[in-house]
Length: 207
Image (cartoon, rainbow, N blue to C red):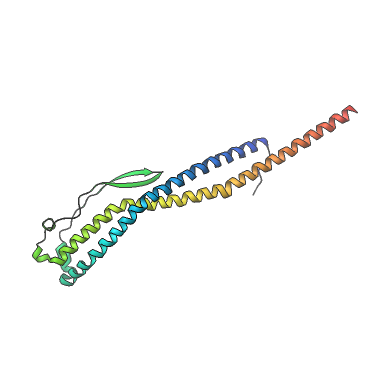
């Protein structure tokens, strides 16, 4: 690595860079603390939502297996016809420079038996129960999706910020401090040598 010449101008530039790195490290530390606080705030609701989703999943699959045993895959597909249009409105946003989105409007997923448009006698209790349980599961998943996306992006931002802080604290700042210290030492030595040279020159002229 090429060494920067020890001049007053280069010393000022290195000192300014060191001050900028110090300020930037402080800002990144505060950002990291805010990201950690936000993750802790979301951790408990996310854990509760995941537990609720796991319970809903455990409730949904047994009636689905019963319905498959009774109607078969083709029979269930026939009962599911026609398909259902589902429109979700999403609003983009930003949190600490992280692009996030939230659901602003959506129709309810859970429907009554009449709203499904299938005759209960033809559908059977297993298929009806499976439909209801999977609608509840899909509702929970849709509610949890924005929060899960936010947690994932916060975690990625936290990891990136930690890497930046470590790079500044452990590599760039020490290198700049060493550069500033070396330049000051070299300039001080030059100044002392110049003073000694001037003193000898005055002494020789006095003789």
